Amino acid sequence: MSRLVLKFERSTLKEVPLGTRPVTIGRAPDNDIPIDNLAVSNYHARVYVEAGSLVVEDLNSLNGSFLNDIRVERAMLKDGDSILIGKHHIVVDQVNDAALPLDSWRKAPAPRVNETMVLDTEERRKLFEQAAAAGERSQVSPDRLRVPTLSVLRGSTDQKEYRVVGKLTVIGHSKMATVRLRRWFTPEVAAQINKHEDGYYLGRGDWLPKINGVAIDGLTRLNDGDVIEVGRVRLNFLFRE
Amino acid sequence: MRIQTGARTDLGRVRKNNEDSYQIEPSLELYVLSDGMGGEAHGEVASKMAVQTVITHCQQGENSRTTPIFGEPRSDVSDRTNRLTSAIHLANRKVFEAASANPDQHGMGATIVAAWMEGQKLSLAHVGDSRAYLLRAGSLNQLTADHSLVAEKVRIGILTPQEADASELQSVLTRAVGTNATVEVDADEQMLLVGDTVLLCSDGLTRMVTDPEIASTLLTSTSAQEAADRLVELANENGGVDNVSVIILRVFQKSESVLDRLKVWKRNSG
Image (cartoon, rainbow over all chains, first blue to last red; front, side, top):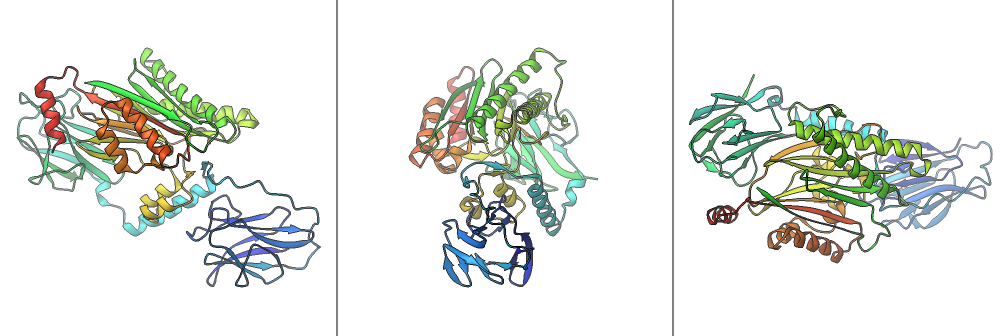
């Protein structure tokens, strides 16, 4: 059976059998041969059978399709031909079997580049694998396994220590506050801590808090051991076992 | 605190129908915006259904404590926030069932971003690439993380933000309402302060207008509605390739005294 073989430098990345449907090549994940490279257009080219011959057609791509190093818009293919798209080669491997079907070619639906689409399960799985690989490289932070706490060093609060467990931790006079400041004239929300994917961030309330003596400039990531000052209250941000 | 709202949706300059929907429910202080997809008129069906379901479910949750919760409630957010994510789980189910039942509507779906006030606290939930921003003390911060292929690649460090902006894959979402039987919903909370501005918007705005342009428009508008109008006009002037929708909340003191105004002025001027 005939097939197209996607190659990058010396390695074979993918093999796609040639059937009755056109084979599409491009950067969009719904192509039959997706190539994730900035030089490749969303829907770059396609290969199909027309009147018994194998044909490559460039879909008006930005950087072109090259057949044996010559830029082509549409060309017949034979066994062993190599189509260059971006930095990837697609090699035609025509094993001589039955003649290619004559009437099989039909126009593929026009690509709708601007339409929003959702990744299918397979593509999502690949993305998560990439994420996992990237995670391994950057090492899992040990902080994640420990509980962030605010330990009161100075000032009038309702407890001596607080666990920072919610998405939002409020420091202030409000009943909604996790860390309740008891002094008069303290604002309802003096400061707030937001939990994000990658850590804990201190933001302002009606007061501008300080970290290690320096007033914050917008949301600021907290590190283990930081001393937070909100008015006259001092809190030590610590990851506890 | 008192909230002034403004909102607008527009076809843009290229599209033939508007698939965005939004609704403001003043009695609940609930704000919902959705960007539909699926060709023909189905994107519009999906976004309308999503918005309506969220409003109705939150209303029912307020009316009766026995209203069921959809999706797994989280332990690190408030009941209010869990109700909001529950509403999006239900919206997902409704759109998915409609799409499955009707072959014409197969594949329809929507993004959603919803904001709900509880006193001073803002509950936020979203799926897809519609965004929420907070303008505080002159600086603009995106509160939501896009569920798009390029944004997820940037977050795991295999694509730079510049490559993402230039990518042709910006329209590829990793999550949407109604395209799968279940969906993961992101939730967040913020305490709002007097002087804050919150912006909810579809990607028709953020693909056309840069963050600094958004910030300066919000800062120089005299009302929330003026800001909404100007942002939509800006998106259209810059090309208007997609439908564009915005909801804007501006936070004021309930009764503003001279002292309060002075405090806000002092905060905004650093």
